[in-house]
Image 1: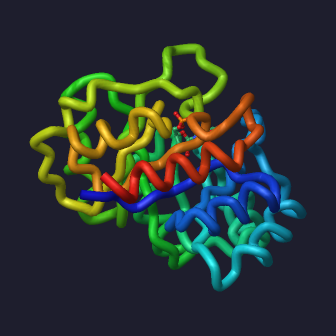
Image 2 (image 1 turned 90 degrees about the vertical axis):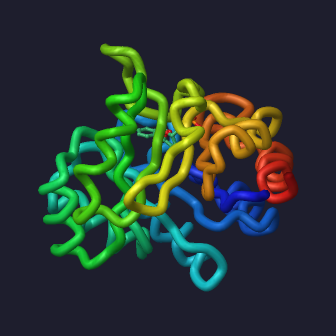
Length: 213
Ligand SMILES: O=C(O)c1ccccc1N[C@@H]1O[C@H](COP(=O)(O)O)[C@@H](O)[C@H]1O
């Protein structure tokens, strides 16, 4: 068993090259301004030029407005948009139609009801990403290295392609895939030496662990 890999919060050429070199399937560019992984339009454009023809880029957004999204999509030449806020199904549908890109909707998980909420996105998103719910009042809705009970996904048979995020690391990703059967794993802080600082060795170790279990 193995899983596809998304290395999220890439903000430097070195991290991008490490993800490509390690055989990652996607890189995430974070457009949420409070994030330590935030990339400006200028940085996104330069990373996108380097990523072109090598790896698809997924833009991470949190309850973003249309104009903000339009600028980021153009700058980052994005292949998909990840909605990591409170976007309801209608908003996912609206953005998919307006921008003509696949929509990855993140479902923040604390309990079984959050897994069940996947059904509402059946016709409006293209991909679902289950991430740990961050505590009320947190600065970020993701990227904090928090896990949730992976047992909640053990028997999951969802309506859409899906992936697992939240607190996965080179050390635990094989267990995460074995427990959940996740077809894709998404990591940000688990391949960093400090918030926002990607570690090329950890990126390589993560990809190896996810691809060879
Ligand atoms: O990484 C961030 O700073 C971030 C900010 C706002 C929304 C999402 C963010 N990251 C996403 O969170 C998950 C899990 O991250 P981690 O591996 O637990 O650190 C991942 O999908 C990132 O895309």
